[in-house]
Length: 167
Length: 426
Image 1 (cartoon, rainbow over the protein chains, first blue to last red):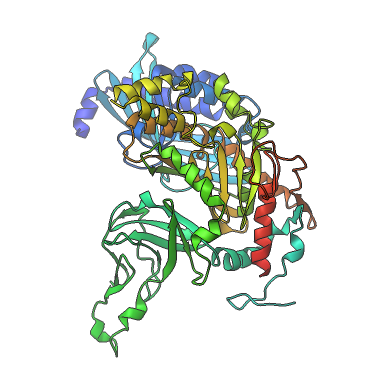
Image 2: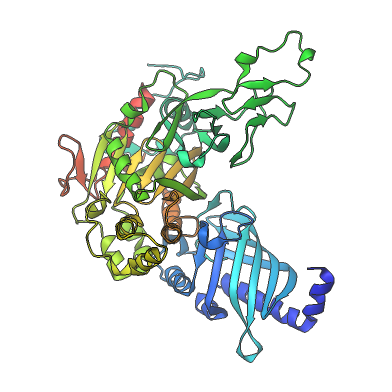
């Protein structure tokens, strides 16, 4: 799709609303407010973190995470439980999301962005970078919901470290 | 007694650092001991490099490691597997930087020397520039000795080492049982999770046959399971055992009912696998296949630790690579059924993701625990690591004459450290 066609289908107000939504999600995750994160999703939404770049069929590939609603809820329960050594205490994170590109796919607004996370724990500061794809669906009251979120880490196919928070 | 290492350094006397029931924390912290381990252990025994399905056809390859040395695992047209040091004989540039792929030739990108998949030097550009043509036969990529057992590929720098089958010994039986999770289709690697933790490699080696930590560290994993599955993972005091298999190898049987996946095939299909069974029937599989796949889908009920760097752990291979004295890379290799049912392999992927990997419900807590061992080991220069647990006799069926303890015993760690001591003081 050309840049011209994209700008023609997503107006400025809609684009800004989507950015605000994604920034709000980022802030919720940095605050570890996972209870507030769950309702941002559609019931059949999928949260996907691949282990390889360029994978199209995530269901038949190995992922870092491939979460439906049940697994997202279980993940949130685990991270909030206080019994997960890696999340108690968790690393602190501050993330920035930018370089937005918008594309319309029927009723779905596809937003691709770049994310950088600064992670701090044990006197150690790490930087993690990822390409993020949000598939946003219109919800009640002019809000958005996430139908699919694919977080492709820049080093998805290389070694990572234990991670006790969400991207 | 002062001895020298094979590379000329002064050897450290490590004998007093390993006792029957404890090991000294310098084993986690001393860079000189780490160097000696690379020399005396990783360059001196059989080291896992890949599974045969990683190089399924002629001219396919995978890059891997033997200790800290990068290697390429290849398969030639005669189906022979080669393990080659990934280092051009001219100026030592790596000749392959891909993780896996297909190639009949490896060309050094620096000066164009090219090598076949058996390592043989094929072409040297402008060879006439040398005063005498290089002795091609002497300039092959360095090739390690390779042997395989039931799909597992091992390599060694040591030409006169005992055959792999002798090194594995009683562990062979457990490898054979582990591979039954192919459900008759054979075992195939499906992908890898790779992560590092800032800690010594032996901290992870200890963990694979440590059931004692499981209900504590993995409480949140257990809480995420349905009641039936949680019950199965309630491993302490239910007939499991840990057994020393010799040469540093050990097995921890957590779920005795899942030792042999070809047993109990007539048992009713558990509720949690009802959907999978229905999907397999819809895929057109007969009743016998459906039962085999369902029984095998979650893997075996034991962890087999093979000294020094690989484990067959329930439903995956766990490979460790020593990076530095306080840095270790772990690869969790997901496995499935070769040409097996799509629904079955998909379920295996989801089960793998649930526990394993950098964001799994289990791995990050293991990694945090291992890191904390390394951090805590900094508290004082004369600390000992206790591996003395195991006063109870095993409830299960350990081999007569084998050293064994109950499932939470530290028998496996003691087995590994005694092998470590033998090799480091040899």
